[in-house]
Image (cartoon, rainbow, N blue to C red):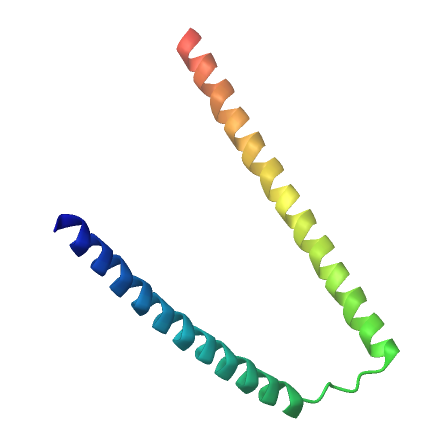
Length: 94
């Protein structure tokens, strides 16, 4: 009798999983059709090649400036830690 219950339980779970897979497929189809409808309505902005190059140049300048500022900040912090460390060593030796 014990194995019969296990078999029935397994069959019930298989049936539930089959139904869940069908629901999942339907949801995916609905999502795909909804997204494809949204994608058809959007228009690409009309930007000239010069404007794109200008945007890329400005972006590169800004990232370079940010990297320079980050490097300077790291150097200043390192110098401050070194100064505090040396000051601590000198005071310890006295």
